Image (tube, rainbow, N blue to C red; front, side):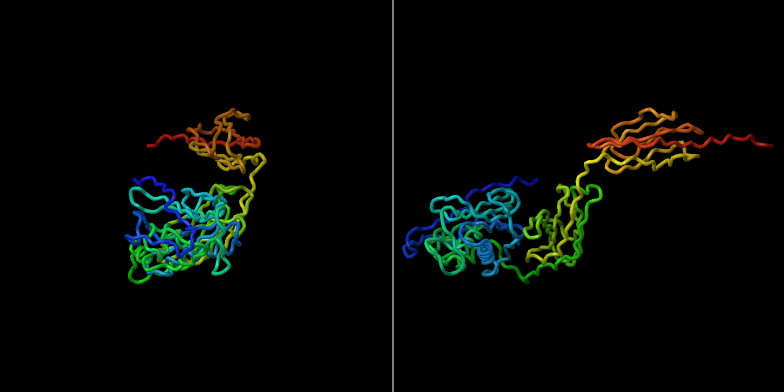
Length: 408
């Protein structure tokens, strides 16, 4: 049985040393330090809420991605972060989504904080969030123009190091060293100690695996059983080396949220719990340890509007109205659109009495009937907006054939 994830708050803090960088004193002792947790199945997706008070969202997003990519681009570790798109998340919480965001809070000399959650039984990392304290510091991007602040690229590189399982290093020039100075650009370039740390956690493999080929032919349609609240997706699987398929959904075709991770070989998915009369846009991609494939085409669908009318009048399916020679073992079946329950009236009178109420299926099994007998029945269909009665139908059972006497 899998244990509950363990929340770990403030995996580490980045402390901005307020003196000039030349005055930072190095610590003496062990170099890189590893936490007892790591990711089981890289690449590790992350999302960015780029809203901040200092630079454009596009600049912030690019700088954060630069920091994440440094760990795979500058090392041979069998690990990579993978950008999964924008998010509106703005709080550190265990929700299965690794999110990076800016906060209007200030936290003393702390530039940013990484939070993580892991399994206490397996040591597997399950979720991490990175918070930039935008209320306490001014952030910049690029390589010029910074004054009494910090570059997002450098802070992000350091924090993503915590997100993959590294503690602080005791080497002053290392990215994972615990303090930095105003506008330093030292952390965006990994030190050999940083590289040794990530490669100790995620040893380089042999032949480099390749990402899977992109799926294609994504189609989206209303779910027949729940057209107001569910969508059926289907796509073509064009790879043989994927580990999973990732389903992403959007309301505007620009900001997507991952809604499902499915096993290799999956080609269909039903997305449920949706809002009626709403247009959703979907895309799908495959993933394995080497990275992500490209996306499918975008597929959009609009859920049906919720009904505000009573159901349609029921119609007889079996036995047909006026049928003769019906088996004495016959059952009843009918159809109606928009109904949630049914009341059935049945008997040998042309005004049949109530027989069953509150049925949720458009069919009713009957006991053995009498031969050569005419039966009458009708159905009342109901939903939250009213009821609609059907006509009175009839059918006649077949007569039992008399047995003749044998002649000698």
